[in-house]
Length: 83
Image 1 (tube, rainbow, N blue to C red):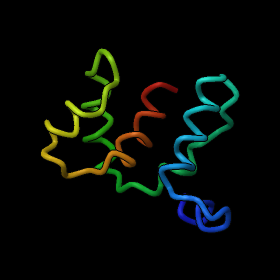
Image 2 (image 1 turned 90 degrees about the vertical axis):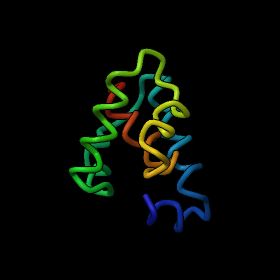
Image 3 (image 1 turned 45 degrees about the vertical axis):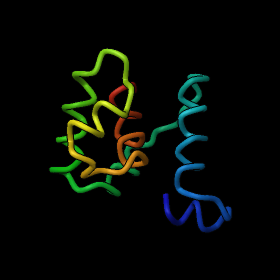
Image 4 (image 1 turned 60 degrees about the horizontal axis):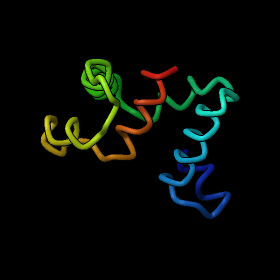
């Protein structure tokens, strides 16, 4: 993601926003390769919490995880929960 953001002169958050829009349009290509950007254990922790969420809102999860993970990381993992 950082390479894409740098090449396009965007923030990583903006790239994630575009990916979320593609998901909403149900035109999201395979994004499994971007999972490598997050350590497996961290991914699993965030994925577990997001999977429990009924509404997918990030603030309660961010608070529950005591701010250990950025909102961008949570948004990225949420893509895999909803996929």
